[in-house]
Image (cartoon, rainbow, N blue to C red; front, side, top):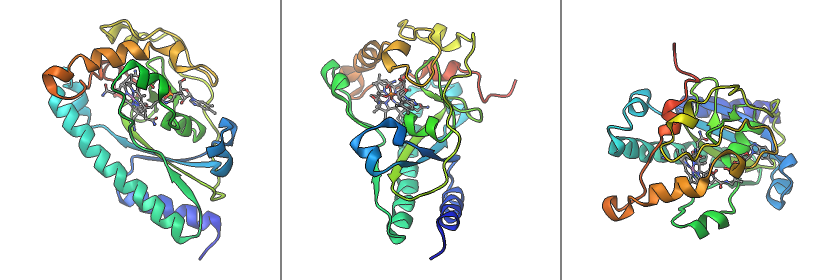
Length: 230
Ligand code: B12
């Protein structure tokens, strides 16, 4: 039913009606993997964090945690709407897990998932900030990302290939562990050049004996001024 362009519009409308904050389509074939060879188009989805929760996350880590969990449920719904429409139209797809548990240094090194940030920059939704998070003009880094890769020939956007962080160092200064390196991202710059991910991960893991789960620090994203009114 309908041509690819009409289907893309139907998908966008359904996702908007169901609360998606941002929806983008990216050509990920440039990422050159078996996965992206088979599924060259990414449907990239974002749900914005509640501004008040982010503002207070240093005071109410548990509220931040609960908020992120609730957004997971909402993002799962958006991804399943996408899956249902794609399969109804006869397209193939691969949904990327929202999060992968990283409980040690070894697991961090072995993470072999497709990065939601890659899908989002390819879809022109934002850039990778100095904080190593996807930063969008509308919401800064305060977003939950989701991705469905597909073989549907949807029209894709102009990708973002460099950052707009300039000389800003708010996230660099906000990290109590000095994990953010003050490096500007452009396509090709790897995670380790931007942040000491093992330091970030270990500091969050330190809380497991006390909290029974990883600490949701979030100070780097709280500090970012992009998307906030002056
Ligand atoms: C492993 C992981 C971590 C690790 C490593 C951190 C990191 N930056 O990757 C640890 C445990 C430290 C961590 C911490 C946090 N994480 Co985390 N994490 C992940 C996870 C599961 C996988 C990321 C990964 O390893 N990808 C593989 C590597 C190679 O890619 P990458 O580093 O993510 O990104 C690179 C590519 O995207 C590349 N790139 C960008 N565009 C393009 C285009 C092309 C063509 C190519 C080839 C590459 C490319 O540039 C990036 C930098 O090099 C993702 C979920 C997911 N599947 O994406 C969430 C995710 C990245 N985490 C997220 C969040 C929110 C956090 C925390 C804030 C959690 C918290 N509550 O405290 C912190 C913030 C730390 C920080 N400043 O980055 C969000 C980020 C949302 C956003 N705005 O970007 C994600 C996307 C989860 C989600 N579903 O929303 N995380």
